[in-house]
Length: 141
Image (cartoon, rainbow, N blue to C red; front, side):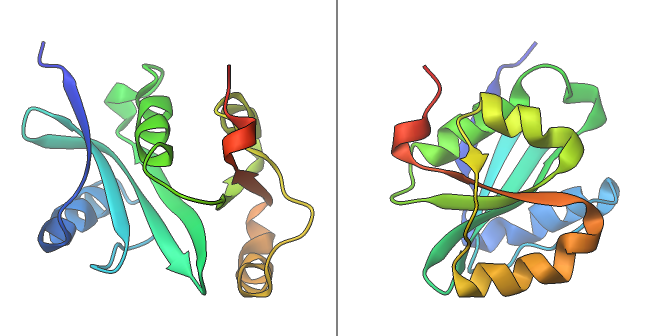
């Protein structure tokens, strides 16, 4: 079996990740302004996520793993790869059923969001989400 490759997708390849999201009915669309991180198995994208700049704050969204690859730590490896390349705090809105996943991967609950993210959180709050963040001090040991 070919090993997985985790990398930042070139902006010109953004349509590939949107096809991946569409194929799996994942919410969200990547733009060329996003950092799009993917896991490849051979030539196939098997997981992806986006890091967006929201008014100067990093925001992780649309983390999705193909069902065939779930339970194999692909999402954790993708997070580890992208976090290693970030400076500052990375925020995300985690669905309640994924809180433990994010905690295990070094994220903590966020009590106060920057204004630009607070307004975004209010738009999505009906989805049973929790604001979380990752900083260098919270990396799992």
